[in-house]
Length: 147
Image (cartoon, rainbow, N blue to C red):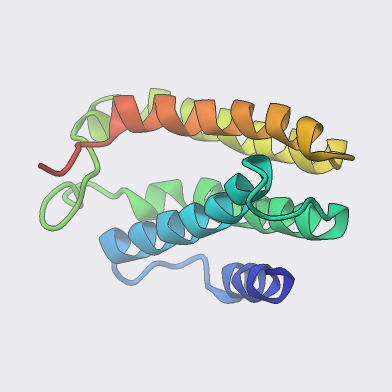
């Protein structure tokens, strides 16, 4: 798991800030975010043993992903990128300030989790619940569910 998370983290840093295809690029970042979160979720659920170093590495990868997304939000969501194969809600473009606020809160929550460096699975669960709550709120407000 550690090697996978390191590889994902390195890919997050390797990508440039200029996005060639905003829809594909934002989907790639969200898929990466989902994979990292899925690994942490397994630890929270007790499906994977808690390992402090691996958890911190995963949280750092999540932070790198969130920082890249946050820094590139304008390039990832330019006008006109609300069509095609996307689940991004039109509300993003109607309420860009609110969307940026939600993404900023997510980034702050992830940074807090990294800074706290959860010492055990219970501490990770508390941090992960906060992070996941932000994900859920943003998805509910700014994502269209595929039928």
